[in-house]
Length: 112
Image 1 (cartoon, rainbow, N blue to C red):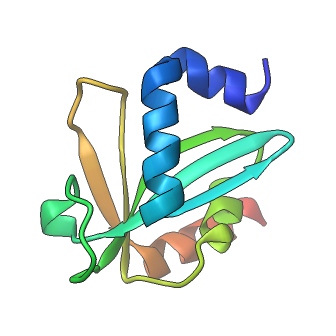
Image 2: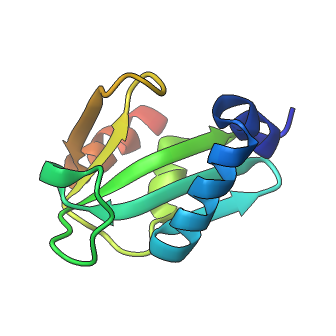
């Protein structure tokens, strides 16, 4: 199963299409033959809302496929102080945010 097929199986075709449109218009998408990622700038305090300003973090909606977390971070178009994602899956609002510079340092040590 390729990355898009995996994402479709996770979200279903309708929800995946909705997210793809939203993140293409208001966020950042990265795709390749073996990965897909959706991210958007957000306010950590109000991460569920798509806003035009007050961004202090990246919210990662979806990362599927090969590659490492530091590869995905390098794909972000510009830095923000924090980065967060949902641990678990739909229905579990277990969102955690991390200091981006500190995460990069940890990933550099881990990957070398």
